[in-house]
Image (tube, rainbow, N blue to C red):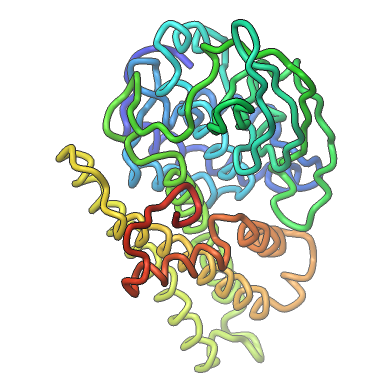
Length: 383
């Protein structure tokens, strides 16, 4: 990642230009459980992994809606590439914002820096002279096969604080166990650490909303990044599924039994299109309001945080419904290996993330009904 400020529109425009490259490698990603080297190089070249990196460190520091534009564009071409991009974008951006500036400068001097890891299940961090001894086992390290560094969370055994830790990937033990139905190309393998020393300056509080480097974006808090990332991703996946189905139906128009002349199918397709567009409108409207709050310098109201989480949940499960409709309407085309089958599986992989779980919607419903007075969102739950 070169230093200097990237043009935000250019990042998204350049991502659009990667469609053919990503789409033609989609099946290879699915088979091999990782992104192809030319794809990773191209994502580096356009600055996709720097989506959330502060501009002062050479990144894009995208607004939430710009980031959703980027990740939906990439996911439209290939769901795995979109997922890996937001995972590395998140993992690389946070250290840039919250490590002290000298440490961040040192870290970002790494050629082709890319940081990935896992943060929802913290390990243990035992304080020692000059830093911490880190131990634990983590799952779902999306993008780690293409990363130079690991970002992982652990509980300070003395204070009880959950902190983020950054360390080179050559200090990590990986378990290449990503044998799954969907999102195979993300290579989201497990990893372990056993008494690995991490200097204090390569650690930061994951509860912080006051960046050392960067602007308003980082005041949203760690948990809110999941809504941006998964929201943009699922919208791109849903759009691709509907476009693939429409193209298939048009190609068969005029043939005996074609769905192109089936009124019930046409109605269902229209309803699917409405679901996707309504889901996008809800996500973008909610984040637009948060962007206005960030610009004003005010704290984000709990209600707005609730709405973004509800919007992601809605987008995820409406896209799951769309995927089921597309699969059922595609006959044996969807049964065989190909774009529709892969995106169908990837959609169902995405539904399993904690950010779209029923627990999120149960908490959101509680707050929306006025039954959560005095509570606030901490990552993925009301406390």
